[in-house]
Structure formats: structure tokens, C-alpha cells
Image 1: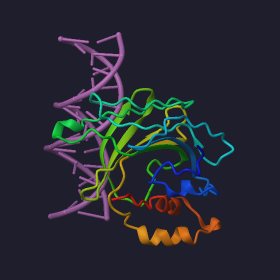
Image 2: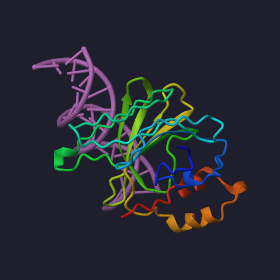
Image 3: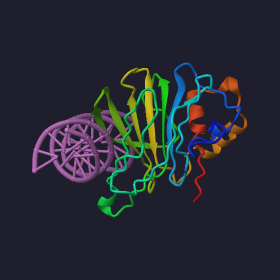
Image 4: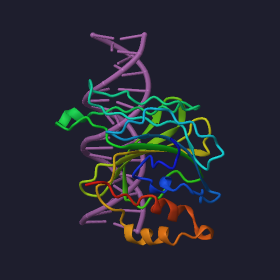
Length: 206
DNA sequence: CGAGTTTGACCCGCGC
DNA sequence: GCGCGGGTCAAACTCG
């Protein structure tokens, strides 16, 4: 598998074989750490060399349907990111399906990327093996259960690890505008904000 | 005043 | 069974 296979509906630009890293000097899209898509079957590890603008480290599939907390994610990452995939789902009669999860590591001066969606912070924790705090966000759109975690890389604070859980069941507030932007993509005018907005043009199969 | 943030407490799963 | 660690809740607080 290579990145021409779109690993995530959240990031449609991955499907572009001619993907060019458009990030500016304060933001460097570095690693897609893993992609998890229920119903998928990509259990193989991906080892893209860094000649690619992005380095996909691993990609797996999991659901949490067996025995409570799934521990389905193991990564082949050289950095062994410690992404758990616990779910407290059954507590309220929810299913334990994890849904779609995407994590990636970026080199960024800012902690929280503006990806076009409205996020509400609901937690902050210090985690083991990382002196930096991990922040928890929920999509503030009514009815949308997408969550994301943002933390600085414990080994290199220049990197930010962002993990998205789930797929938005609504469009980005700036959907139309950024669709236009993608269509009229001008490499000289890319910036962090516009790209991150653009990659949120998710059209989940609802 | 409403929306978002902070932060300590609580819950839960997992490993020993 | 117990302790640890990660994830979430919710009250208090802040800000526009």
C-alpha cells in the first residue's frame, strides 16, 4: 500500500498521488501514524520511506467488539507511540465500535491545529513517558461524537501528535469555501490554515 | 450571559 | 484484589 490509497476519509488529499507537502515552515506534516477504519482489512504495516512528504508508519484495523477494551492497535512505529484505544462504550448502552481513527505527527509550533471544525476541550492529562500534557477535545457540533487528542511528542517537543477518533457526521463549517480552495489550489498560496481546512472535506457515506 | 477552558475527581480496563 | 494509567465528567472559572 502506498499513500495513493486514501487511508482516511478525513484526509482526502492522501488520495492524490501527486501529493505535495504544502505546509509552511511552522507546520510540517510528518507522520501519519496509523489509520483505523472499522470494516477495513489493512492489517499490514506500512513502511514508507521519508522520501515521501509523509511517512506512514503503520495502519491497522480494529473494532472494540471483543471483550471490552480493545487493544487492537499496535504500531510498528519507530517511536512506539502509546495510543490506547480504550472504550467505555458499554456503560451507556453504546456500542463498543471504535469507528475511524487517524493519528499523525506533525512538526508544528502551535499545539492545536485549526482544522475547520469547532472543538470543545473537555480534558487535559499528563501521561506517562511524556512530560507534556495531553489535551482532549470533542467536536462541539450537536450530535457529532468525534474526538481528538493533542499532545506534544515526549521525545521531541517540536512535534505534535494529533489523534482523531471517529468521522464527522456533518460538514465542516467552511466546507463550501474550502472545496473551492482545493479546486483552485495554488501552491504559492498554501498555508497551514487553508490546508487543514481543506483536508476536512469529509464526505462520510451516510 | 452563553460558550469555552481549567482542573480535580472519578471511572474503568489492564497488568501484576 | 490492588495499583496504575488513560479517558471522561462536571463544577468553577474566564472571556468575549
